[in-house]
Length: 401
Ligand code: PMT
Image (cartoon, rainbow, N blue to C red):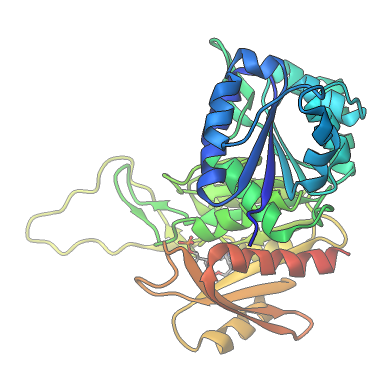
């Protein structure tokens, strides 16, 4: 089989050096990559590097190898175009359909999915001109990943940093796998909760659970690749990298998770509750470490009920037509318990998965049955958590339509 053809557009920003890592991941995973830098990108990383890493010729202008008509062919033959980093200037030229170098010509002739990973200073990203250009590109079907927040060139920090190359690679992989030029969640805002809440007993100890956050992160990553604006409310997911283009809101307890979910859900088209939320919390919090008392039994831990966030947002939808998805983590009588839970929680879809000490929690795979409030039952076979996430978004997307 021919290798999938990827065009890696690189524009002139300091983050151009990170595109080398993206290029390496793309080539090592079996893609034929043609790098098309802008002239200014070559101030940061030279043509020799791109050519050596990709194994393909590199040019910035339409005047090289004219007999091969590269300004048309490269775009026509591509299965995916990804521009990383995409500067404010490149976004503007793409949005306005300019064709003054090889990259912009390629963008005009490409009929495949296009992903932009912007990187620039916060002021440039927030400028209405850039925001309108991004909106135009998204309206036309391009996936424009939200920049990450962090250290920028120089001493300043803020939104505008190129997302982690590994995460951009994941978006490319998902977009290529779907192979559609019109992302179905384009223009949608979705909220995903992930991880496990921790309910503190004292400054040292907490009641928690085994959720790693991987299933929720897979949901966030796949939604972003399908064009959605994603808010990920992440409970104690230390160690997982922020998915590219996703707004991550870190929380600790169930009460904090509720606050963050309600806030983000106010303008959301869909909310997916993959987080393992504690039903109870210690009724009191000891300001100092609880000491053991010699010769005495420990005091019992008195628990107080936590709010049921899924039931609350399902009963009182922030917007008409908002789609709400819950997860049910069950150890026995899995489907019967799941069906009862769907009834009780009042959500539109409930993803029922079996869990155990070493089952589902923390693993890369999952299997589930997705129950619909309309009586449908869709089994999802054992496979990567991303495959389950894709099925969830297929079902959400159907309902949003
Ligand atoms: O994070 P991983 O390691 O990848 O593991 C994934 C997972 C097993 C955590 C995930 O697939 C999963 O099943 N998440 C839901 C865990 C859970 O809390 O299940 P539950 O059956 O206790 O709750 C049912 C639903 O109600 C869930 O959507 C939960 O988010 C929600 N809930 C629960 C309690 C509560 N007080 N408020 C809630 O909103």
